[in-house]
Length: 387
Image (cartoon, one colour):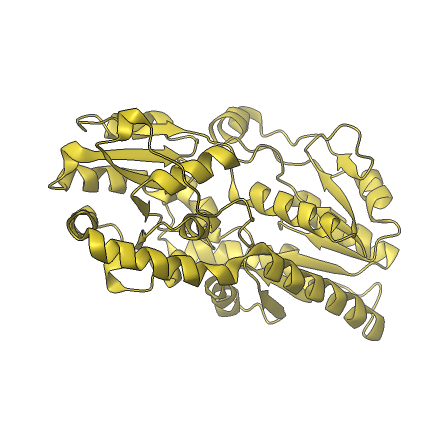
C-alpha cells in the first residue's frame, strides 16, 4: 500500500504521539509499504517526508515549543496535495488544523482516510488545571467531532478506555481498539545498577513533566515512605513543570534524577530499576508503562477513572487511590518489604506484556487501512454534501 501519514506534531521523541507515529512509520516501511509523511519534522534525503512550516501562537510560542517541547504544523494545501496524490489511504493522527486540511484534500482527490485518537480532552484542559471540569472536557470532544471526526469512518483507539470515552460523547463510527505497541528494543537484559545507586531502591516513572502526570504526588508519596532515605526516584521525561518538580522534591534525601533518555538508555534503566510507578491522572494508553512491563518491571498505577493505564494492573497491590500520596506510599513500602512476592509478579507481568508486541499491532493497523480502502470503494461518500 501507499500510505500517507499526517501528523500535526512530530519531532523530538518527548511525547507519546511522536513516539507512536515514528514507530508506526518505521514498522510499515519495514513491511514494504511506501509511507509518505506530512509533518513539521525535517528528514534530510527522504523524498517521502514533506516538511511543513510551523504554526505560531504569539505570546504562547515559548510555552508550547520550549516548555512543552512541541511544534505544531501549519497547514499547507499544496504540500498536502503532493503528498496525498497517488496514495491508497491517508491516516490522520490528530484532529488539529493540518489534519482537518488533510481530510479535505483527501476528499477532493478521492482518497479514503482513517484517523486516530491520541489526544484526550483532558490533555488540553489540564494546562489550565480544569481537567476535572466535565462540561469543558465534553465540549472539547464535541468540538473535535464537529470539526473533524464526524467525517471519519474508522478511528484508531489505542485502548478500550478511550473508545468508551468517544462512544460516551456520541462517536458512532468504527472504533478500532489497537495498542500502539511495544518496540522490540524493550526487553529484559543484564543491565547493572550504576555504582552510585547500588544501595538504593530505584523507582522509575516515565512521562512529560506536566500537571496531569502527577509527579508531585509521587514525590509526596516518597516523602511519606518508611524507606524514604533508601529510595532514588528516576523521572524519565522533560516538560514545562521541571522547576516546579525540582522545588517539590526539596527535602528528599536523594534528589530525583530528571531528564530525557534515548531508547537504549531507558531500556537499561528499566532493567536495573526496582519498581515502576505510573501516577498520571490522565492517560490514553501509557505505552511507557507497557515498555516497563516488557522489561520485567512490576508497576504501581493510579486507579484514576480518566486513565486507561490502570487496566494493566493485574492485582490490587499494583493500584493506588488516585490523588492519594499516603496510599501510594503504603503500596511502595509493601513492594519493598515483600521482595519474593515482587519477584513472582515480575514473571507474571513479563508474560502478560507479550500481547502488546508491535508486530501484532501493525497487523491490526494494516487491516484497518485495507478495510477503509474497501469500504470507500463500496460506499463512496456523497460529494458536495453540506456539512
